[in-house]
Image 1 (tube, one colour):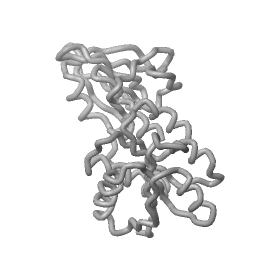
Image 2 (tube, helix red, strand yellow; image 1 turned 180 degrees about the vertical axis):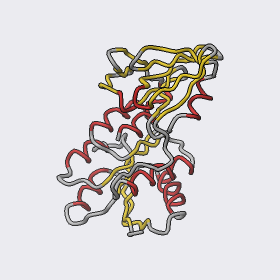
Image 3 (tube, one colour; image 1 turned 30 degrees about the vertical axis):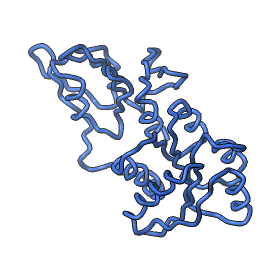
Image 4 (cartoon, helix red, strand yellow; image 1 turned 90 degrees about the vertical axis):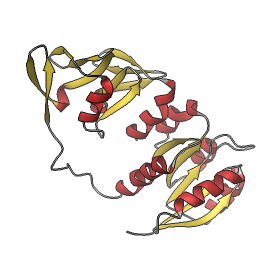
Length: 229
């Protein structure tokens, strides 16, 4: 794999240490600099380029998003922030991923995979199912993945809304979530699972799918952003 150069922009030294420690697990990641305020980074980018920025948002003098907007050709960006309310704004700025502090190594790895996989054309997995059989009443109903709009929890059951109507399945939403392709279906609320390809728009804490407003839970905002980008 080609080398990926990165810089860290965060006003907290401990954040630099954590990110550096995680990056050491990837031989292709090469640190190019550490910056503790936006103006330091801005001066650096006037004469240097990198492939990736780990970007904090709330910083004195110049915020992370203000810096990002000022760059004519910004590199890929992974936001690292303790504030989830900026997640959808980050989506509008075309960031690669949004890590909510404190984040685990596993979550960090997923973010790096998004950055590196975006360098290659997306290809459909051979083993990714196009259809699924779901039990409803005494029948097994076959649905195309693309027809499923969203899933709503109903205790130990769940309601599956699709382009032809709705069926009730005797499964918990978490069990059904494990059966659906994780690349296409996103948990956006403790009671809702959506097909990201059926999203019409995201506004505030709601997602519009086929004219229906689905709520976005506060703890799921950053996760949603990760799939939208």
